[in-house]
Image (cartoon, rainbow, N blue to C red; front, side, top):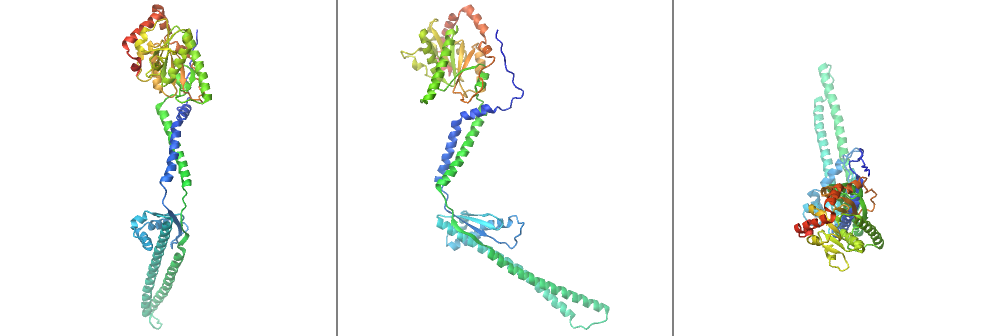
Length: 511
């Protein structure tokens, strides 16, 4: 009696298992490595193809009459906006004796407020010399315009103060005329009137003196602003190194390409939901992983990889040959995403079974992987579905087919009464693996094991199920009862005859 033990799901299981996500992203290293390399090449190419025009830079110290310690940069921002006006651009072009339009020249330079009183100007040109000349002309034009505006402001303020003073003087003259040279009088009303006139004269005299002082201060304020506005960093060409720019842009492109590639790999891994861990593949198929192999490559592998791959193939071939010899029912190999590797496994198995007698392979693969070996004198006998009925019941046989989308499920029972699934990791989605397990269970075809192709080398999960024996023996009672009633050989011949009559070409039917 066999006791099956099924592990219960943990109540504290995380909503997102990061291990399959990390493995899926790592398996897509060709994608994100290609995007990273593409970004590196694009960044380096842009530095060579899109060379920036010659640029000159200069810095101005801009003084303001309204400067305050707590200024938030409003004044320098105003100066930057004034720099981008057609009036400044026209004055600069006039000094350069250029016939360009001011609107076009504005697009070739820009100003930046570094501090409250420091502005940086960057100007482009056809050459370094032209860029430096443009920067000098633009700085001089801005300084001249700024000084002119400050002078006009100071003059206007001084004139307004002097106008106020002149009005006060006129009023003072009227007061003095009213006072005249009148002698003192004992009349209280006349005495009070005289006192108010004298007080008004004193007030007007004080205010006139104040307006004179303020007008003088307004006039003396402009020279400070004029002398404080100057070029503090002479115009100079900005050096440009193509190798340095190429290295910087290549590094930026590499990082961006790598980030985009990793993001695409992660998103596609989550959306596609293609199991890559042996634990998840075994759970979705309901069968344990019995062996792992590298994918059969068209190009030769490294010597140490060929040695390990050859040793793993020999172990798998020995295990499958032992299973086929000890089984009373035909065994089939069904592939999912690895037809080439499955054909190699089938040929190795036929070679291992050759000492026991002739071996016949029933080819149900969609491609010509096995059909090309059918006519070789030293190879096994390979027959298609239409010739399967001619196989003698006493001959040793096994079928090779596919469970990829488009499979004719009812034809799988003619390949074998039990099967070994050869599945490429990360090829089929979880939903399709469930579909394969359900269809095989409905056909009473037990999965005696899963051969994992191209597994993740860092996968340390367990691909053995506790209830694997129960899964492999699904429908065992029904098969034994049919064998007792009809006999295995007779039932297998009937199946082959039925398949030959209803399936002209099993490879085409499967896809």
